[in-house]
Length: 368
Ligand code: HSE
Image (cartoon, rainbow, N blue to C red; front, side, top):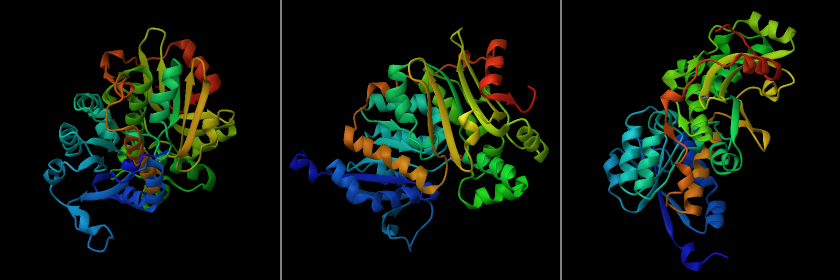
């Protein structure tokens, strides 16, 4: 039963960045408002939209402002949704919002990978929350289940994942339709999947950021992406694709995180010829999938749209709803597992694990 006093409470949200995901978030919040308010027992209002541009024809055009200080200094804003992209000023605004006692949600994987440990600490100190469901796997709920369910009941030992929608779209279209790489990339850009600079997608850096974030939650150690051996799909040719097919596999860009017996962590991003028996090989187009091995749960696979306006926006809104439902106050299990530990990185996989990987997942397309 809802308490009557809660029904009339108003939660004011500020959106930072009115690009694809920012606009999607505003649309999901408004389109789903009745359902959200009914479930959460509170009113939700988008009070500000911060962007450099004006949007005179947008239904929320009157909320657009250009000065972040207005948001920072407005005590009525309790949640800031950061969808600016890029490290700065996204990090600076997020830190300022947390210091001002506002919870922050983000889709910005660059900020989470670079500053997530610091921002989570700031959230803890200021008794607010920093949430980043949309930073990995687009519309797939993965951060929350991993953080709140899987790691609490299991020791996670391995994650194998398709974490970039653009490259998966390119690889599956190259495989199915025999089209070339450039055409597939252009289509991915048109559909709003690709990063502003497609190198982040095709050279594997976007997938690398995401596997670093997942590994930080799973193993409690945040390995900076600069350490991680990363190879993208630029050099994949139609011949590679055909040869994989002949051998009963499909090429997929895989992010891997393995907890070694030594306690060190092996991370890598590389194209693998994934065996058709492995569920990751059937993941097509913009879909992502994260296969997590827990010592009690065994394999868990989370699957869904890894990029795109509305899937990503739905993840942002799920974080906003979680804060409204469970409170602005910091939950201890949200930061305990996010400690920067570059020294924990191990580039080489032991021979035994290379053999196991070949049997279960497949082989990397390129020799290392
Ligand atoms: N460019 C990213 C992708 C967007 O293609 O997966 C989602 O993070």
